[in-house]
Length: 438
Image 1 (cartoon, rainbow, N blue to C red):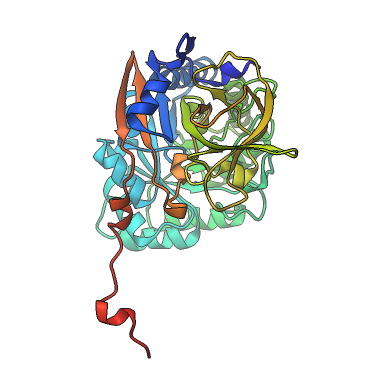
Image 2: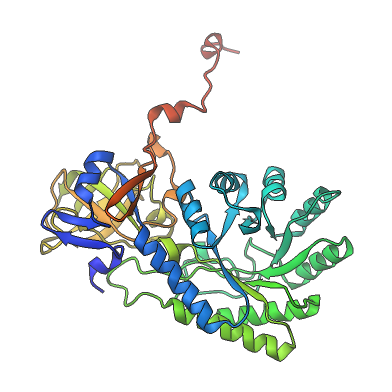
C-alpha cells in the first residue's frame, strides 16, 4: 500500500506540501498551533455510504447503523451522525450530554456501558430510546427506576464465548470477559424482563476491535439466535452484532478490510440462522465506529528536538501519549509524512516520540522518512479514532484543537485547551491549612 493511501480521500500533494479538502496543512498548523487534529468530511461521508450500500445489497430486512461515540465524540461529530441517519451509542452521562446538546433525538440515542452509574441510568431514562443491559445488577437498578416511568427499549448484552484474532486488550466477547452475560444469566435477565413487563426488544454482542476476518461472527451469531429462539422473540426484535471492523494503520499492511464482505458475511449468517430456527428476521443494527472515522482523521505535530545517535534517531514531537495512547496501550503501528515535502525520498529510519515523561510515549518506531529537522511538521494519518477520546492531561498536557475540513474551508470544532481550564476544577487548601501540622 502506498503511504498516501492511508490519508483521507481529499488529500493532495501540491508545491507547498500536503493539503486536505483544499486546506494547506502548514498554514493550518501556523494558525491553530500543534498538535492539531483534522477531520475530512468527504472521507466520513464516503465511509458511511459504503455501509449503507452494503446493507441495502445484502440484508433484506430493516437495518441501521449506530455510531460508537467512544471512537471520537464532539458536538460536531454528533451532529454529523444525525445528518447521516445514524443512531449514536453513548457510554455514560457525559457522552449523553454531548448528544443532547447536539440535538440527537431519544429514538436515535443508545446507552451503553459495562457498569452504568445511577447518574448514567438516570440520564439514559431521560434521554435514550434504548439501553443495552450489561448485567443483572444493572437490570435490577432499571427495574427500581421503572415504577411509573416510560422505560427505554432494552437489549441484553450477550457474551458469546468467541475469541477473535486481535490484541488482548480489545477483545470483548470471549469467555471470562468483563462484558456482557453468559447464556444462563441472559435467560435469567429475560425472565426478569418478562415478569415485570419491561420492554425487552433485542440482543447485542461485541467480539472486539480491529477485526479483519468476519468468520468468528458466524458462531457468535448462531449462539445469539439460539438465545433469541429460547427467549421467544417474534417479529420486530433487534440483533446488534457489535462492530469493530478494522482499518489499516501502516503501509506494510496488505489491504484495507472490505466493508462489503463484512456486511455480506453477517447478513448471510443471520438470514440462514433465522431460516433454520423459524425466527423472524431481526432489525440488524451495526456499530461501526473506528471504520467510519479513523481514516478521516489526521494528527499534525511539530518536531522539536532531533536526537541522532549510533543506535537510533529520535524525532521528538510536541504531542504523543497524552493525545494518542494507542501505541502505549496496544503497540499500535503508525506511518507519517513530512508536511512540506511529502514526496521527497526517505533518507533515514527514525522513531517518532512525544515530550512526556514515559518511555512508552512513542507514536511510531523505525519509520522511514526524509531527513527531519527541528521545526518540521509531521502528519500522522488514520488518527480519527480512539485517540482524542482517550486523551489526557498527563504532565499538564493541553488537549489539541480539532478542525472540520470540507470544501476548502476549515472550521474549528474543538478549541485548544488552555492552562486556565486545567485549573478550573481545582480548589486550593485554606491558607492556614497548608503548613499546619498535626
